[in-house]
Amino acid sequence: MKFHYWAFGYVSAIMLISSCGASNEVSCEHLLNQIELMEQGLLEGGEEINVDLRTQIMQSYAEFANSCHDHEFTPEALFRRADLLRSAGAFQEAMTQLRDIHDNFANYENRAVCAFLVGFIAEVELNDREQAKKTYQQVVELHPDSDAAKWALQSLQNLKLVKEE
Image 1 (cartoon, helix red, strand yellow):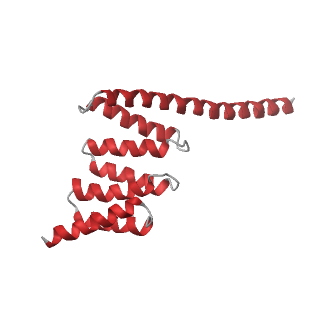
Image 2 (cartoon, one colour):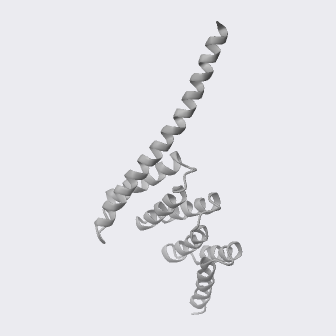
Image 3 (tube, helix red, strand yellow):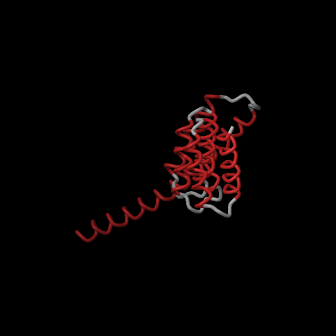
């Protein structure tokens, strides 16, 4: 009799675990569909940004990343979120998001770009040339063969020119 209860409990636990995995896939796809619809709405607005929709999309990107951390779209969702944060004037938060992507998604195709954008935001948006210089130097060291390293070298040269003037 005890064996039957134990076996029933074991089978129930296996079913629960496997159904959670399936529901997570469904919820990830559902979240992705919602994000796509919101992105279309944002793009249809032309150059005028719908602030409420931008906020909703930023929240949806974060929710997707938290719920679907291992999904292939997660680093791209966070990258897009960082772009929207920057456009909303949340520069420090955008930089933090970009660093997080760089540090936690080693295989993300725009990883070097994330590192570069941290320096770019420091330079252009925050006028923090020292932080920009350090970040650009790190981009060159960490991603020497990337386009981002070329941009970082150009930015370092421009920073020297500005300092000389």
